[in-house]
Image (cartoon, rainbow, N blue to C red):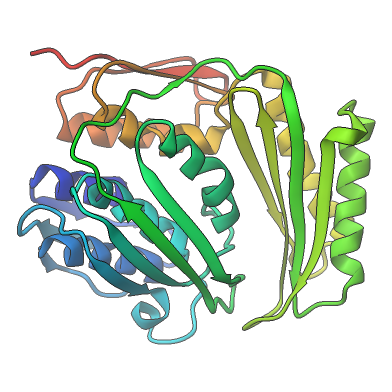
Length: 341
């Protein structure tokens, strides 16, 4: 809700206020990645901001003008005033569309957590989200300079965003076609080399045992060094007309094989649905869909709460007819009707 509101506030120039931010969470209020997203949104449009501090449960944001293309550095670590694995992906998604529509090129340096639970990994952005954005006219390139796992962080990403003057093309994602490839990375940081190999081996066995053709499955074990220990399996399923991504992270006491099974089970559920948009992609496409010219239509494997929340927010900012066909937790279709008049 916060990130979507910030993006729309910058693009439309409308001030906004949010209260009771994360009020029901164990640690309520703005966390480092949320605070950095606020600071990033303010930096690109010269906004006046009240309540931008750690733990704040109320925020006022008033844009000072249109988004300005340029060179920016956004560091979640500085917002936390200590080492932090707050997600850089969430910061990027807050400013991506305003800068893409700004008419000039931008370069971002993002520091913090690159592979963090409860947020899109940089792997997902690079191989699923940004290719889909490119299909509607948002051109952005991403280079992962340093991985940063939860909880230590320490990652860095460089992003190039090409500005455009015209409107975005509608999002049309209703069929996916046959499976072309399943590939991914089993990665660990500051951990023994046998762990990523075990993740990769188990994932390959789970996927082929489920009927996916072995020649289509390619998994790379990778051992990394960085700020702190971490482990995860990152999968990308590529179809003729769609891409989907799935992630599972290691944690203390969880065998490498279980990490692999978690990611594979999500992928297999998606594969069985025949929907082109995975549940995570669907909610991330709400904003580009409502900002595009013409009708958008997205068929997703699951109507998630994030999807419903994003739709609610855009209905309060823009006069676009947004429809969700389908029940929460089940496959469904997001329809953004063509703007009238």
